[in-house]
Image 1 (cartoon, rainbow, N blue to C red):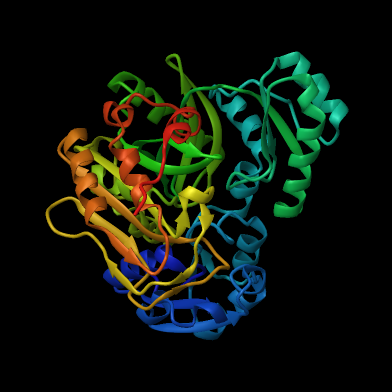
Image 2 (image 1 turned 135 degrees about the vertical axis):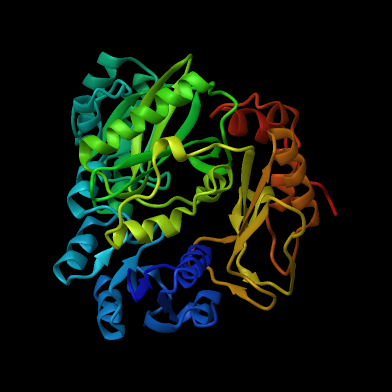
Amino acid sequence: MFNKILIANRGEIAVRVIRAARELGIKTVAVYSEADSEALHTHLADKAVCIGPAKAQNSYLNVNNILSAAIATKAEAIHPGFGFLSENSKFVTMCEELNIKFIGPSSGVMDKMGDKINARSEMIKAGIPVIPGSPGEIFTVDEAVKIAEKIGYPVMLKASAGGGGKGIRKVETSEDLPANFMNAQQEAKAAFGNGAMYMEKVIYPARHIEVQILGDSYGNVVHLGERDCSLQRNNQKILEESPSVAIDPKKRTALGEAACKAARHVGYENAGTIEFLYQGGQFYFMEMNTRVQVEHPVTEFVTGVDIVKEQIRIAAGEVLRLRQEDIEFRGHSIECRINAENPAVNFAPAPGKISEIFLPSGGLGLRVDSAVYQGYEIPPFYDSMIAKVIVHGENRMEALMKMQRALFEMEVEGVTTNTEFQLDLITDPKVVAGDYDTSFLMEEFLSNWRPKLD
């Protein structure tokens, strides 16, 4: 086992990893920007190192400064969290060259699955159903037009190196394709430095289902069930739950087996997620996330498996302790993301100083992952997440009622949050009934939602 690891991230995920490491008896090193000098993760770690100015490009994305901090503090491994450098294969390669263990997959696997075109190709080889689309990268409007005519409208344009909803456009007709292609490509170049695009047939509306997998370096792979992430705004997840009410036991087994088959095919190691679209009883591979995800706590609640601890153990060379038959799915779990944003003004970020805060607590099956505190100032440079509220119940209705109670209790003063919006969403009759898909939040719920006036 490692003696010391560095967490190349900030916010609640950095706090989450520090706590898991401490429970394993591992010392931790936090890195922080000048804007995060008073952030909670810097206080909880055994050591904290400043890695640059506020802008992420100069700090949390500054590979040289992060690796220098790891070397100076004698950290044996780096946990990337999610976002920032978590899916940067060049960073992984540099870690490998410096004999610093990256707590995640190898650079080769990351290249193979991080590039969505390569990922499609590998899944076809593995016999996993994929969404009909372009055979490779697209660089010009003319190429896009020809492929769209072949697979049929509507189509979805996606950045090959994409993530976080960037470089994505839904195109309904041939007249709309040229402008959307150029806009999406420009966005992709700005966000990822890569203008390669690809195209898929739109499977819409559908369920967005993802399967959590764990794999060790000895070829052992297990899945931890599925999460339903269909409640999305602009391709960004708003609320997640596990298990999905749309998946029956037989289909759940098939999805899990497909996810494990995909992971084994590419030699995947550590924690990852295979994402599918599910429509009319058929599931289609969409992409693989080669990292831990924001919504991993719902899976931890229904399985009892600490995913972050398993990540660390796997990276340390341990054999996966879990067999598929050991994993039991118990009850139902839901996660809501509470952000400093104003839903009434197109969800505009609302950074500022938290003057008062009360996080919900009490009872079994309630967890709040957060890195804020009273007097903390949310900086404008990064993600605006305040907390993740996660609940677990014996059944879905108990989980829904527990989440309603938790959101009702939550109080944050000094900044505007989306708590009221989340409370309205979790109490919507269709959400309560589980009768929703990827179209629901944008096309139905938001068109009718109105913020309550104080």
